[in-house]
Length: 121
Image 1: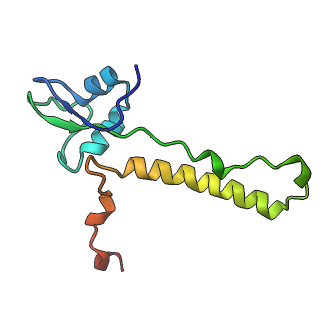
Image 2: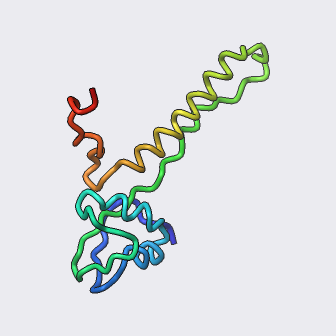
């Protein structure tokens, strides 16, 4: 079946994130990363207590098809700069999708919101 798209999973006694991820067809590393905010010490082999609620990762979104457009036959004179710009948009869309997946928690708040801006200067 399809991997879940977000939501949550309620663990059974002594179940591990690795077992849960294998059961659901998702990456154990991504499952633990998504839950590290709520459970800072979680690892793929952590034995969970019955009733532990794990956030499930959202499926990675594919870049929008419009990011790379076919060039109509009548417009073969499309410049190299325009082709590079389209390719760059497609790459940025893929990066954005992967970055968002890696740093999204159940409620949709990015992890970086918790960083103190003053600490970055």
